[in-house]
Image (cartoon, rainbow, N blue to C red; front, side):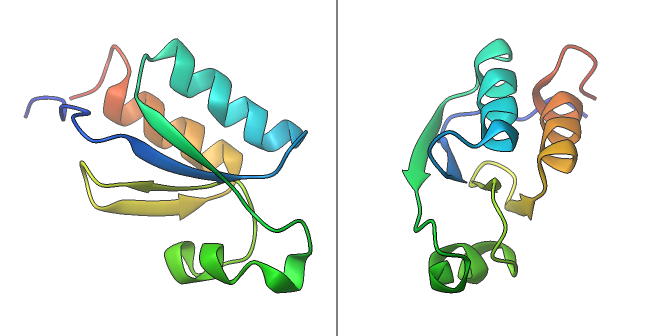
Length: 90
């Protein structure tokens, strides 16, 4: 199976100055994967946009239109990006 083409940018839901969000940004840049940042409401209870996308109010969260994957948690996202768009991607 070949690695998906990142023809559409991944949407990254993030906060300003969030170290977990920056970790995902760095990996996206390292893998040269197109993405669009959506900066969301800092107040946890107001994060309805993220909850609609990933089912949680935590950031970072991504929506990958190339694979249909949505997820949150920076470690999971980095692992997904490496497995999907990294050098060893199947």
